[in-house]
Every structure is written in C-alpha cells, then in structure tokens.
Image (cartoon, rainbow, N blue to C red; front, side, top):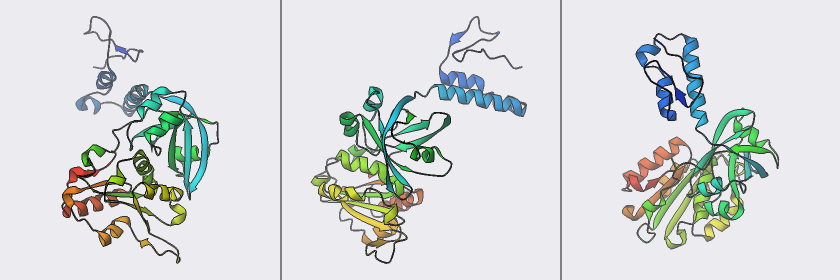
Length: 301
C-alpha cells in the first residue's frame, strides 16, 4: 500500500500519525525512497518520480549565494584564471579556512554544478573579498560555460567545503623537514593555495614540488614559480610531451620522482598529492615502500 505524500516538503501526513510533524531532510528521503522489496514492484514512472522528488529535497539543503565575476584571464592552454567577488557574502569569505578546500559553482539557468578547488589562500578572501580558481575548460561542462563568461556576469556558489589539507599531521617543521608535493594539470590549483598560505616551507630543509603537464603551454602559474621558490619550495616541472628545446624532466611525475628519490629520513617526511588518480596511487605506493607513513601523505578529499 502506498500513502500519498503531503505537498509540503517539510512535513508528511499518514493515517497512522495523529498530525503532521517537521522532519529533517534525511527523514524525508527515508520516507520518499521505498524499501527494496516495495521498489521492485514500482512502475518506471513511480521510480522516476521518487528519484526526482528525492533529488529536489537534496538540492533544497544546499545554500547558494550569487556573486559576480571580477576577472577572467587565460592561464594556460585550456586553463583560465577566474576571480569571483564574494565581498557581499561574508559567510562565503569566512567559510574558507584551509588550503585545499573546494566549493560548488553553478551558472543560472544551467542547473548542473561543478566542483572547483579554491586556488587562492584563505587570507586572500579575507583581505580582498574574492575567491580565485584555476578552471579547465571541458567541452559541454559547467566549467566550459564559466570560462566563456565575462567580467560582471553572475554565478552561484556554495560555501567552501571539506577540511582541506591536514597540514597539522606534518608539523612542526623541525620534525618533518622534508615535504614532497605532487600535482598534475589543474590539480596545481589547491597546491597554489597551500604554498601561498604558508606551511613553514622556509623552515624545512627539503620541500619539492613535482608539477606535471603535457607541455609548457599547458602549465599554469609559471609566473609564480620564483615567488614559490623564494618561500622555500623547489619547483621540478615534468613534461610528458615536451618540444625539442626542453631540457628538464620528461615523462610522468611519478617516474621523475622515482629517478630522484632522495628520501634521507622517511620518518621525518611528509607528502601532499593532488591530481590524476593513477599518479596519486603510484606515488603513494612508492612513498610507503620507502618507509613514509601513509598518515603523512596528505590529500584534500
């Protein structure tokens, strides 16, 4: 037997309940999605209806704030610097507390949101009232539409999500003097936030960033390399398809690291990873095999 749902998304009435009462979103979902034994007998129409209503309830729990683009510039081939003015949304500004956090962004009239890592450090939002992103334009995606906008166009954002990189696991710097950072493609975005947030790189004896891209045209933030190196981070660019003039590391990030290794004290070594899944898995395996604790290998998800 199926009971009719109340038109209100906040309450449900039933012949077995004396009166309607408020429910949490999860309670609503439990009542909207039937048990497996019952769902097997639902028609395709009822299944679609239940799914769409449940999705609507989930969407209602997400808070969106409107904010205008203040700048958008090419960053590299297929990559764009995007700056969004959040100065009128103090809840957005204060939600960004750790490097490595991300948020959802959507464009009005295009419901599908995109998850984007915040490239600027938390201090940038506090002092400038803005978030910066490194966005890869992917055909047919929200990101492609975002990269086609212009200054003043309005988007919708959620507050920053996630805990970011748990840097406290590799503190103090005197104890964890080696930090190995690995990034590929647009995965450099939250790494920029980490480096520019400051994690005492200048107080550690060995901080290396292995940054992989197809070629120099695909490598963002080259204009920031000197600043990063002055903060104590050695940059190791790795190109998988360089031109003939390239004299640096060739291949994939994990191969370049395997050739270098140089882990003198595994118990005093930490790592930060962001990028392709295969890279992260292979680098993690190499580090653990060399004695680095898996707990000291940090990711932002």
